[in-house]
Amino acid sequence: MVASKPDEPDITDTVSMTDVPLIDIRNATIYRGSTRVFENLTLKIEQHEPAAILGPNGSGKTTLLKVMNRELYPMRQNNASVRILGRETWNVWDLRSHIGIVSHDLQARYRDNTSGLHVVLSGFLSSVGIHGSLAGRISAEQKSRAREIMEALGVGALMGTELRKMSTGQQRRCLLARALVHDPDTLILDEPTAGLDLAASFDYLTRIRQLSEGGKNIVLVTHLLNEIPPEIDRVILLREGKIIADGAKDAVLTEKNLRHTYGTDLRLAKIDDYYLAYPADG
Ligand SMILES: Nc1ncnc2c1ncn2[C@@H]1O[C@H](COP(=O)(O)OP(=O)(O)OP(=O)(O)O)[C@@H](O)[C@H]1O
Ligand SMILES: [Mg+2]
Image (tube, rainbow, N blue to C red; front, side, top):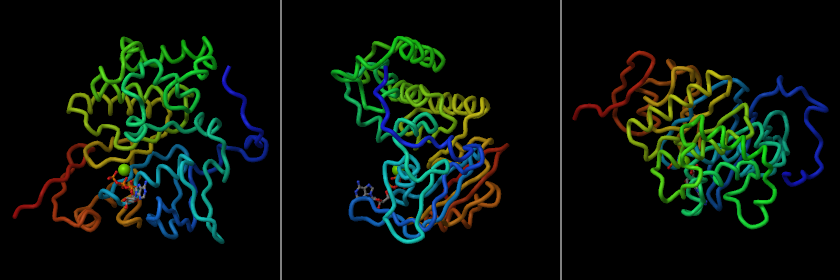
């Protein structure tokens, strides 16, 4: 049994969830601690609209994902609103069944001795690990679902393995399995291949593409243009909390836009349906 949910109106009672955007941010001012990251941010991403968010370190990408994931809220002010799937308030339990998240923030919060299976099972509880009384809340059905997903992601052999004994790529796959336990419609991925070698990155990206082909929407934050899969057409460029460009990949990924976003000279190539940035000469 999972813990009982706080009473909250069910969105399906009032609004058809199929008709509402995944995220609809209007005039939002968002702080991290005392840092104002966004001022009057307006951004809408539809459901089933795969999107990539790019920008320099500190430009606000992770902050934006935390807003989508209801870990951060905008300042209360007139005409500001953040609606996720049509709703301004969510409880974490309900939201996790719609949006799964993989981030290194989350990865870093796990204890080194947490087993692969416990990482995945913790997705059912929206917790970090399964400690003390939490273990009793996991049903046999949830355990078998967790095992099934781990097998599908090629980490079935790591159920009893502690995180510290796994490679970064294996840890990341366990976190992806954690995000998938509720079979969410949307996956939010914050630099999912950071720290992975080329083969592990490509393997991970292939799995993400398969999930996308299976109908899941992907919102991806990355620093590597070549990691934007062909399925993602919308690209949002952020710099210092401002949207520099937002639209179809071909229109947004230009040398001019990228130079402006990153403040450095660069060249851009398109090979098949992939982009690659490299340093400009001299
Ligand atoms: N916990 C925090 N407290 C205060 N300021 C923070 C905190 N976390 C981030 N910031 C600040 O918020 C701004 C945006 O950070 P954010 O993590 O969203 O950037 P990012 O685009 O994800 O960068 P990176 O590419 O390095 O991951 C930065 O100026 C950062 O210093
Ligand atoms: Mg970040």
